[in-house]
Amino acid sequence: MSRRTQFVSYQPKTILNKGQRADHWFWTRYSAYPYTGCQHGCEFCYCRERKYCPRDDPNDFAYVIKAKENAPQLLRRALARVPVDMIFTGDYQPAERKFTLSRQMLEVCCDLGFPVFVLSRSPLVLRDLDLLQAINERSRAVVAFSVIAAPGSPHYERVCQMERLAPPAEKRFAAMEQLAQAGIQTGICFMPILPGLCDDNANLGNVVRWTADHGGQFVLASGLTLADQQRDFFFGVLRERFPDLLGPYKKLYPEGSYAPAGGSWPKIGLRIREFCSQAGIADRMPRPIIPGEKRALNKRVVEALANQVYAMELHREASQRIWAYRKAAWAIEDLEQEIGLVYRTMGLRGLQSIRDVGPGLAAEVEKLLCPSYPISK
Ligand code: SF4
Image 1 (spheres, rainbow, N blue to C red):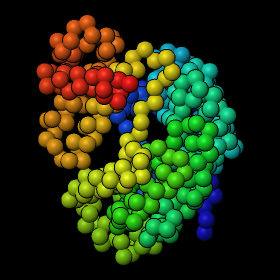
Image 2 (image 1 turned 90 degrees about the vertical axis):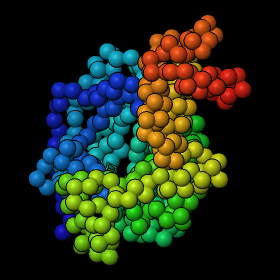
Image 3 (image 1 turned 30 degrees about the horizontal axis):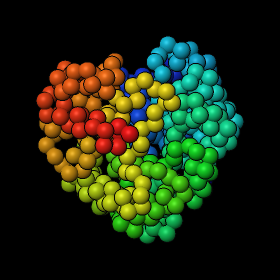
Image 4 (image 1 turned 60 degrees about the vertical axis):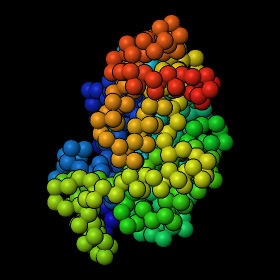
């Protein structure tokens, strides 16, 4: 029997989550969400983990939707007190038709000049295209769609069953095309790549091709994690509807593990990189820069270093080297001066004076600042 959705309105005290600096994945420093719970109810969703869903029945996550009715007012007050930077916001599950909180939150971001990143599994986001265009003109907007299997892939039907409450992937790709035509940066979050269902070359190539063919600029991918009550819930789904998958998944995710045993991720990431390169798109999200941003070059250097970190992770380089690059990227993100000016006035010595940038990394950064390097153009 299908379960009825219960809506609960409430007034939280706070709305804005603040990071110390922008992350190297979606380039967001802040996040603010209008709802808890998600009617799309994807069976693989990590949000059923106890830390995100502290309820006795993890499937309440899909059927008890809490709307933060004062979210726009809280957001306006909170954003007025923090430096302008990218915010991860909006939630276009069906509840949005009833409460319109995502639209009201985008209006706040538009008024205050904050760039936004929206991740959606629904074309409902197109309802707010006018607002996204206004934000994009002033401070940049990026909309990514969640897709883990594309039509024509060998296990497409099975994946569709696991996300059957969400609009089909074809509709998400069509929405992506409209956003791209409107000049909004868009792409795919290919997360989570389900072992045995989404990680075959046919599906990896298909998702990348559908993205490129519909104006997407990037495919950002990561693997499946399973923890505590979400692991039990997902294994219950496999036991009931996909029993042939239960044994292999139990082997991949033994009790107490979070990521799959055997560390297959870098190989999959490298295959996606290859497909993206053939299709002429990126496997990283290009960093949006606010028009007129004074430290645009700093942000481009950080982006280039973060891309190197990702490449090193895919090639399983030594973690010490990876951390050195990551820490240098953080230090340059925090730098108050414009890095080009630091270099022009003090040369390599100036670069070495930046926290966590030693002689080796200063030479790397110098290459990025060289006039023939793409970020300097
Ligand atoms: S749309 Fe996203 S948040 Fe909602 S259930 Fe699916 S994976 Fe989870």
